[in-house]
Image (cartoon, rainbow, N blue to C red):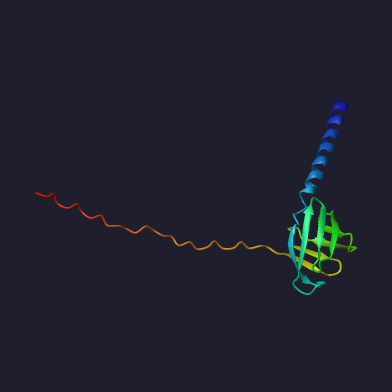
Length: 135
């Protein structure tokens, strides 16, 4: 009985630890998109930067057009290999702040308003009464 209980507790502990590992994967937000450099920009103020993400791997292009491969070290931190610097990102992925002081903010695309449609109705055609029968 003790051996069965011990094996059961060992198997349940292994299953629980496997469940925690998959929960950590869900903590990484989608960072793909267009960002705008708002502080310490390499190419002047308010320039565009781009991030594409595939799992924990990233491709970064800064506002000067210099690309870098990057990856998520742990949830909340990025390491850009070609730039030799790290960065932290907000939990919702709306901002990325690099070690050199650059700050990128995500650009949220606002959908264009629906065009105003003028409804055209058919003209009302009066129905004339039938002429009286000829007598």
